[in-house]
Length: 348
Image (spheres, rainbow, N blue to C red):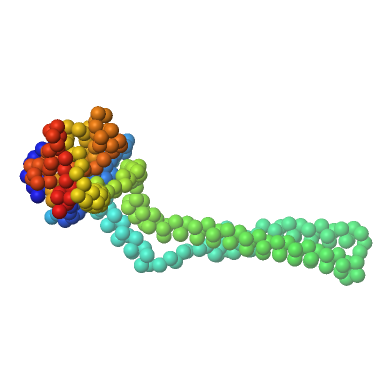
């Protein structure tokens, strides 16, 4: 039963409408996308160093409307000048490098054939012969000294003492010859090693020249810091909040429905009793719910002057003046003008 009336007569409570889950999901997704865009922008930190700069700029949007970015690295004025000089030098050395490459290929095609010495001091003379030539006067002088010594000692030629002395002299000369051979061999090896090193230097010179032309001081690129990355956070969970809000509304609705049922059950139990229900006798009135016929139900206490007659404590019921507007047959008026409600008629 609808309509207005005294103390807010109106319809019973209805269940809340369900939320628009599709719209809530779309709003949640849009919030997540906005959060991702904010994190992306926060991670693009411009950096300035003595060697150069790193600058981010938004260059446009992709097919989905997301911003696209460009990272630009620029050298310091000194570094840029060095790079320009290096580029010009590289271009200028191109022809020189090509020439050096041709000479290197020619040298490599010939193979490595060192010209090592095999003679001593004089052309055609070995190092051993050169040492023996130096030792010959010493050996001859030693022989003459031995012969004079043997003669002065009265040792005849051909005697045993004579033969032992000559044998010792021969061993001494052999030792000198062996030493000369070893010395000559070592000297020859040293000479060959020196000659080999010289030939190798000549052989490698074109390679070293080509390498020197191709290398050089490089421009030092700037080193940038690792910026702490902003985590991608989620936007507001509109979908979850809508569901929680709806659940809370449904819980409240179910609670009120149960409360309404309890009130109705209590009122039905009054049967045909006529209860003092005049609003003028009541105070601390609080609306609780609705009866099935649409009449509002209240919690109330009787005023002090009516407590002895109507009762002490809190009561639940209707207001006679509101019932009289829609069901006058359920209302009785006392001789003193106060109104009572017959709940048997009201519940019927």
